[in-house]
Length: 125
Image (cartoon, rainbow, N blue to C red; front, side, top):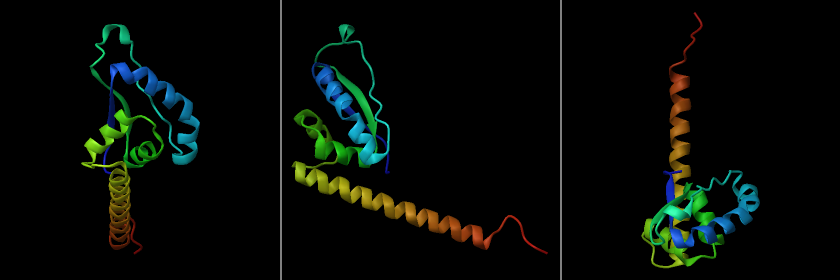
């Protein structure tokens, strides 16, 4: 993954989004084999229009949200993060980012293995 993206929602949408996330946790786990950590807030001391960080996700989590989340305010946040104009463009951009990340990871691993082979820690005499 390129990095961790934070999903923000306005306080007025927090409970709705949190309830939906709780209802799909099992599916998220099955699809990504990753726990979904949702930040908790006491909304009594927070203004309704305040932006709250709710999730930290990588590119794969962003793609899962872009495909599955029913809330426009979440999709709009993702479109902003990926400079996309439409949901279709958003999905393509996230997918491209994931492929790029995979290729960078492969190159890193291949370079690391090559280095191990050329510079072993233990050399037979």
